[in-house]
Structure formats: C-alpha cells, structure tokens
Image 1 (cartoon, rainbow, N blue to C red):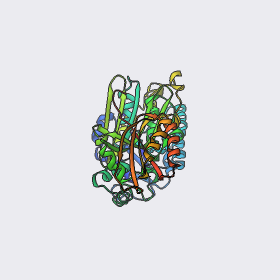
Image 2 (spheres, rainbow, N blue to C red; image 1 turned 90 degrees about the horizontal axis):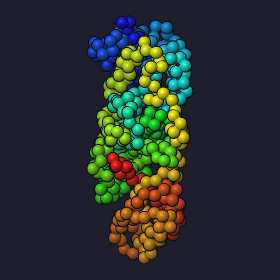
Image 3 (cartoon, rainbow, N blue to C red; image 1 turned 90 degrees about the vertical axis):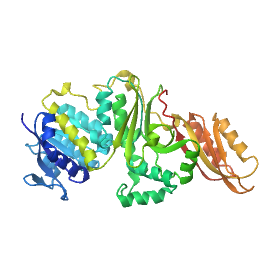
Amino acid sequence: MKPVRVGICGLGTVGGGTFNVLTRNADDIERRAGRPIVIEQVAYRTPNPECDLTGIASTADVFEVATNPDIDVLVELIGGYDVARELVLTAIEHGKHVVTANKALIAVHGNEIFAAAHEKGVIVAFEAAVAGGIPVIKSLREGLGANRIEWVAGIINGTGNYILTHMRDEGRAFEDVLAEAQALGYAEADPTFDVEGIDAAHKLTILASIAYGVPLQFEKAYTEGISRVTAEDVEQADNLGYVIKHLGISKRTEQGLELRVHPTLIPKERLLANVHGVKNAIAVMGDAVGPTLYYGAGAGAEPTASAVVADLLDVARDIATDHHYRVPYLAFSGISEDVSQLPIMPMEEITTAYYLRLLAVDRPGVLARVATILSEQGISIEALIQKEATEGELVPIILMTHRTREQHMNEAIRQIEAMADIAGPVTRIRVESLDEQE
C-alpha cells in the first residue's frame, strides 16, 4: 500500500519525541498500520539536536507544510491558539488530515475545526491533547461507547500534582515547591496556565464533550487554581482523612452538566488520592462498566509522542474509509435532543461538601455565630477542629460541611468574613467523595 506521508510542524519536546518514535519504531508501526508512515517534511524554528534530519526536507515556514501537495497528514505541534488555528484550517482546506497535541486549540477552536474537517472529509485526531501518553480519549470515544457516562474526574495537570504531592509529603509551602518545579523543568517560568487550572480546564472541556456528546464549551468551565492552598490546609486535610488534589470534574445531573476545575479534598482510600508527582490519572464512571481508571505519564517527549503516533496509525488505517463511516471526532454522530437540553451549570448551582478554614479571635460566642450563619443558609457541619489558644488570640478553625449549594456557601462566607472577630478571608476547598455509588 502507498505510504502515508507526514509533515511535522514543530520540533520541540513533543515534536522531537514524535520524530524519533516514528523513525526508531518504523518497522513495527508499518506492520500495525499496514503501510509505511514516512516523514516527508519537518518545519521548525530551532533545530533539535536529538533528531537526525538527514534526507528529510526542512523549512522554517509551517504553512509550507500545510500547502505541500506531497503531504497526507500534518502533525501540529507548535502549540498556542492563533497561528495553530490558521495552520490547521489551512491544512484542512488543502485536503490534509491533521494530528495535534494542542489542547488549547481543540478546547477553544475545536467546534470550528471539526466543522471544517467534516466538510472536507478529513480526519482530525487529538489523543495527545489530553493526559499525554494515556489513551483516555480513545477509551472514552470507543472503548466505553456502550456506556452512559455519569462523571469524569481527573488529575490532568502534572505540575499541580507535583506541587501538592510535595506539599503533603514534606510540609512545604506552595511557593517553595513551585520554585523547585520550575528549576526541574516541570513548571514554566510563567506557571499561570498550570497552577491556576487553565491547562486542566482545556483538557476537561475536551473530555466532557466526548463523554456527553455536547459541543466544546471551554468558556463555561469554572476554573480555580491551587496558589491559595497552604501547608496547613494540606495537613488538616490529612488529619481529616483526605488528600487535596487539583481535579477537573464533570458530572451529568438532572439540571445539566458540571464542568469545573479546582482544589478538591478526596478520601485517602480513593485511587486518585494515591496518584503522586507529575503523573496523571482520570477516573470515569459508566453506567454499564462502573468505575474505570486511566493512569500514566501525562506529559513528556516520548509519552506524548506515543499518543501522537497512535493517532497517525489510526489515520493510516482510516485514510481510505468514507468519512461518514469513521469514528466521529467527538464520539457522537450528532447532538441528540436529550443531551442538547443539558446546559453547562453555573458554579453557583453546583452542590458539594466543603472544607473551610478561618482565623478567628478566641472569644466566647464566635464559633456559635459562625454555626448560626451556616445554619441560616441550610448548611450543616460534619466535623470541627479548633486549636486551643489564650482568650483574645487568633486561632484557626477548621470546618467540614455536608453537601450544599455553592450559592448558599458563598453567602455564608460573605457573612462570616464580615464578622469583626474574623481575620482575613475564609479559605474554602470543595470536597468530593468520588464514590462509585454516586
């Protein structure tokens, strides 16, 4: 069979890994695909010393690859939004299939890209866009195709998980561990996308769209980072039998779909609670299969390249198939009426349990007033920790509540922070059991 000719745009960490996996494992890849997958051209701004480009056409212009008539598949690994969008749409317009690892591109521009690809009858594959080398997209889209997905919850950013792991294991402050992560290359010089949850929200948007058959709606995802989590919060969570993880959570409810990223207390015995360091893990609850877990390397040159090359294998197998018979980009052939009626719920309507930490003057009546405010909002207390202090001193109070609506908790926190005996803002972290019976 004719070779599938590939053009790789971007020769950085993932691009270099993809190049090397394709060349090193060429024989096995050909046997799996049923035809050779050949690198025809590479576009890059900076050479990668790990890649031997002998005999391969190179260019500094990525659009030269997108318009090259000898290219069957464009592999977009340049990252970012605007140039990547233009590059992918240009490639599609020229009849090329596309493989990308760009979660931001898919989460923000995916609806437009998939519509253009459908019109042209070409494939857009993006397994590497979520959780690096973990084949969670293929599992959701195909392996769990018989299931009604109830919820998806995952650790989908390795930087945040590295920070929270070391805060717990070593009792260190967020800023200290972040600096270490930057020195080790796990965090960028500007870590905002990682520690404030934007990267995870991109990935969760994609997972939710595939899980429920709804359009990509990144702009509706609730996003909260971990920069306000303290070593004391981590310690108190441990005392209460919980671990703090930065989770992306999406649930199907009668009111709509939840789409949220935030620090979360989960019970120590849950599998997600025991995912450490830079590893990723995604738990998926299906009505037929029950709970499943997908764990592994969420980033890195060759783990991510593993997913990129797996997509190239799928393209090579499906390239001659009528596009009406291929697996749909987002798993569903169309938006069914019942699913289309499911809106993304505002965070104020979400129901969950809460961990609260407040600094109060140790004076009679303060705790009673806090309990009254919570009670007036219909919030009941499940657990309470108050350290001893001399009367008049500031003392931390730790509260765990039962499940309540976010709107009610927001109002309770507003009133508590207005109390004269409360110093500073109230720390609020949501609590999820992730129980397979939920």
